[in-house]
Image (tube, rainbow, N blue to C red):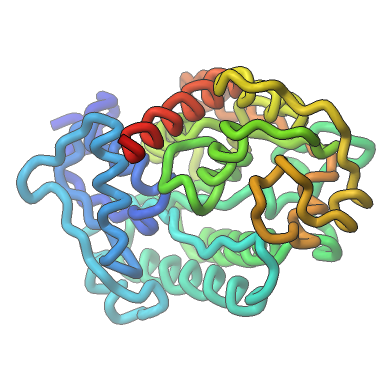
Length: 349
């Protein structure tokens, strides 16, 4: 029997997803269910967060059939348990990662992300997994000088100035590339900042409430953005593309300045856009600018650096391997701001 894409992949094939309670992982599960995959094993670190997964499935209008989802609470750094769960697995989608932009806990973050990737790679090799899909980040890439366009050929030559999260993803990626030299059939994707619905309080989903509130100030930087549905779709498409094995793909639907991002979000919420520029010095000294972060704690130096840099990314390579088109970033922002406001209104009522 052929799979939902008609490329010879069995729908009954065993699929393992890590990080399925996160924003990307839960949307990936929804995408796999839509395509008819009927045996999904979801490895989660904390079973208490399962409601986040089901919240996404409800938003996406996806109803898993009886016995399709097998949710397993396990430590991703436990090699013995991983080998048990990865037996007879067709594809591993590794979406799990510890993320923090608040400062503090850098060593633990790096150790956690690298360690669990190392054990997943080793278990996949031992179990003969057909395809290993590694979700990395643009944070693991070097940036082109003079605000040039960063593509897959760019190599991070120095870790100086790289965020702890970026360092963790860089070394985690190295474990995947190491696995490839030992026979792992893997694909690495480096998504830009992912725009998607989550719990609205953590990860990149927390951007949306900020946009919906409106802002008086705008940071001077820019970066790449990509819709979570596009990342989920790309992962599934690339997992059945034979020529994608051993390749890296930047996933970026568009590059926006933070001013453009804030203006688009403000319009969607019926608010005025930002008027005044906030450079790195102002962000550092003020820390908490009225209206910009809605009274949150002072910005970490890491976040100040992110908001001040002007990075641009080329996400077109994937189109040379599979038929693929991105959702316009402005369309994603408008959809998410409207969804956030609608859900917020329901909670108030």
